[in-house]
Image (cartoon, rainbow, N blue to C red):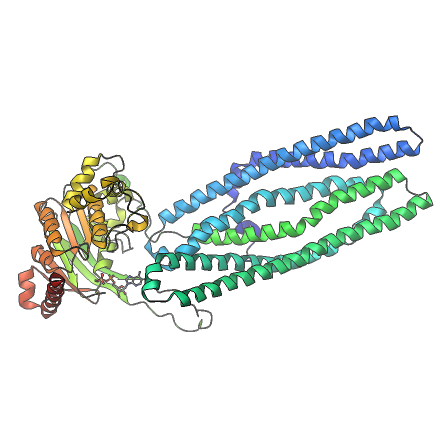
Length: 606
Ligand SMILES: Nc1ncnc2c1ncn2[C@@H]1O[C@H](COP(=O)(O)OP(=O)(O)OP(=O)(O)O)[C@@H](O)[C@H]1O
């Protein structure tokens, strides 16, 4: 990564630079004016000294003093304006990159999130974007400042005395040489700090999300030790980074100091010998001081730039990622077509394998042949007529959820593998697909908003009556009435203030709001008692024939009601038929049924 050309690495930033190019150019002009006004002060000092030498009285100093004060004021004003302009652009770019980063996260799909850690993604979106702003704002300002200071001051110094200029700058090549040498190391350490910070954020995120599990297994001490270990690694990375930075900064200051000593020794000797006027000597010293500040800042600039580049590389990993399911090319034909009341689904020779998890020892085993991940779905063929009530049954891990996710286009499939009403699933525009089909996943995720906002999530402008209607269909309305603030009660982050069964019914009601012709339900009754489940199924069955329902279910009562049940085993559909037929001919189904009945009988005893 570090070897990639600079422009290639910052290519994501170029459009933002382009967008603000006039602001940057104006900021740059202001900086140029700042450097010119700064260089004016030593020149006035030279004139004043020369006038003094020529025997002028104190009165004649006044215009010089006033000129210097005026220049200093102008200099301060210009510098403030330049900083405001360039820092402002840095903030604007930070805002836009953060927006794009968030939009990209919304666009990416399940396979991307399967390999990334939430905490690390948060760290990229916060910490790294802040580093990026430092790169774009203060970093850019200091680089431009140094460039302008050298461009304006060096010719003035050379015009005064080329030999003395060369002597004063003699230590600087050493600084530039060491800066070049240190850059790569500084990048490596900056990247390590950012990566370790990402690791720690991911750990903290997991700690918070799994706090109850940690406590339930009495693992607090071990978890604390693991945190301390991660924290120590980050601390060491910071320390190593600071050591390098600490080495460089004094070195630059020392070189600047050496330049000053040379001027004093050599310049003083020249003044004494009468080959240099005191005025030129004073001006020369003033110019050198103007160069020392940006040169001393070089250590800081290098750090900010390398940290910024590390941040760009980390953010680019996300911005360069693409969803595995690409938006359809032939969206036009669907654009204005009315939604059907019901829709049929056909699945042909569908195969699916999850991508294998990244191998931590990949480098060590680079010669080993990659292991093909096992297929989660194999040769699935299904015809689900419009308005059908279909059940999917099978042992744990047999592929039921994967099949539903493929149907909902949350996981990728071959172009001709799944069709809705004859149209390939991949050709249906996203907005239309989400109106055509709603899926309620196994883990019901709720937002930290009110119950009403959660239920109406898919129809934000809808009236409260709709929320109550779907809540009733999901047998959730009575409980909502008992909440302290009724339908306006907050559900807490991820629905933490609700029971598992309440969360499931809230998620089901949220899906019902969409009123889609196809409803895909992934085990939404697992935490709901048998009586409540019965109520919901009755409601759903009242709509039988009106919408197509495909339901993964572990409950006997639900399976009894399905028109047809597809029985899955090891990613295949091994049998299909209504409950009675499967009971008569499938040992696997009878076995499963028996297990489910036992579980339900135990639940009834509780
Ligand atoms: N994100 C994933 N990455 C890799 N493998 C996965 C992933 N999700 C599921 N699998 C694997 O795919 C197979 C099918 O899983 P799936 O969740 O579809 O089963 P299921 O029948 O729905 O199980 P359950 O009844 O427990 O929900 C399993 O072997 C599982 O380990």
